[in-house]
Length: 440
Figure (cartoon, helix red, strand yellow):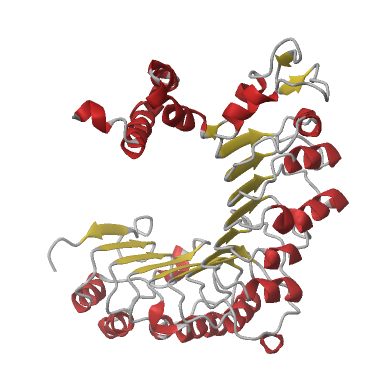
């Protein structure tokens, strides 16, 4: 009976996937095992081949399927082709037999145009059922030129649902890149996930609003995201399926009055590299009450009043937020600890379970004589009654043993706490504390 079950394609596919997962860390052994399975009998062949070819780290295996009589391929530091098949070649059936199984391609662009030339010689797309494309530019001092753009377009098909693009640090927008980005929604209308890294900050983002099915968008993983202007943000705000948005920066000319309600499905927002007024404008124009998670990264040196205004705007997003990460540069003047406690407790988020507040610039010595009182600890605890994890990093005032004990006792849900540079000790170089709460 067990042997018969393997002939059920869904069960056999799970076996192949498990084989791939279990042996994936052991190099090519899983590849050999799946290849053997695909040859052992006709009933196993299709499923084993699908799993074997569904995820490629290079286009090279597919080039090897073209007969040496029509394609003499040599690979050096990059992937280059010294001869390509002629337009009347009838040798594409074998290539298509495997290429139609590829669902994910990880591609390191080698700065030549062989795939683009190949796509012109082959009838139909190179990878007709590709779903995920991970495109990596080499770290070389050259801009994204026409060759790279043409190479990329060779893989654009309607079946794509995820595109992840990492450009080199020397890439510049230019007409080729802007034209490519503008045409992406037309070539790949089903895309629901987009990741970009190292896009030039001046790159136009108007094309994003044309992805009707977009659910996840990351504009940059570091503080270098393109600036989003009014028309781009307006189009993005009307995408009904968008649930996650990271790396957002906006033009300083954007005002709340020029926007209709939008971002109706947004659950996570990541703002990066903004000054305090920019953060506040963004919070004003995103009225979503569905927000569950909010990251504000690298907010530059706000005044205390600006900082409290931001906390109040976060509170206005209301009862739905469960996770908040707030990273900022520090204050020109450190206020009194009771003022700090009042400001932090103004962040009233009753559903909050995870909170990180991190001041990037170490100003421990400005905080040594500023200690939270037990009354201040009660105020902060009442603002976050369902907190489970707390991390405070150089928050401009210290917890004493007494005030920390009061805070912990007032938040029965608290499970883990880190106070780095925020715990009063006799040694000014040792002001950090981390512990888990097992019994409360």
